Length: 239
Image (cartoon, rainbow, N blue to C red; front, side):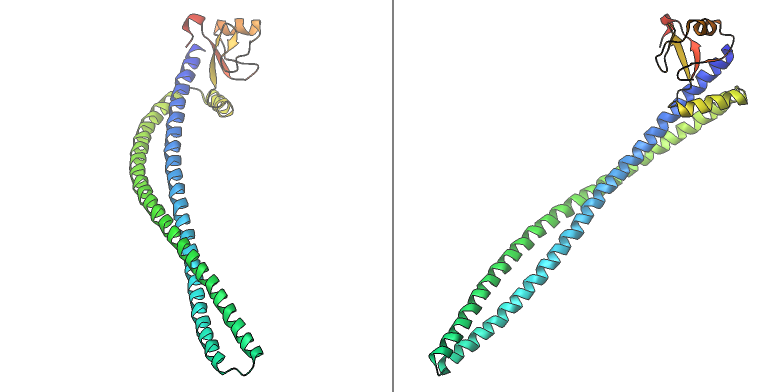
């Protein structure tokens, strides 16, 4: 039984190293994904800003065309004033002319506002473009660094996996299956120490008789609470 416990402890230590490496690799990939998401966000913002500028430019051109058309109409009305026959007709043309001028004043104000908006949007585009360029460089640097780390982790993991294969071969198929099932269910921890009758996996007290049986070290015993495989560890040896 002692040999089995020793093999399982060694196997679990190896599996924990592998799990740590897997987490490191996943963290590196997540870092790259976050950087890409940030860059994509800035690119989306650039697209939206350019669309706003295009819309504002189109509206500005429309207003300027309307301004020109109204100016032509104003001149035509002013020309007609010299030839009107009645005061009523004179007042009507005069009113149309004044209304046209007021409308054009509003159009001119709208054109100025649009030009200010376009100027502000252009400044935003320049800033977003600068950020995108920086992010792209940082992304390229991060990818290179993370890929190097992942390559190192995978090389280390490959060596550990060979050691694991050797250690797993020293454990019976049935015990290995049990160990794997518990490990999968218990967050990577299948075998735990018991110190002072307390399971170090779930930190629950185990029954006195079960603790006495555990100290004999003549059979494998599982925790009645968390079902992990237990081994006795004197308090002076507690890790």
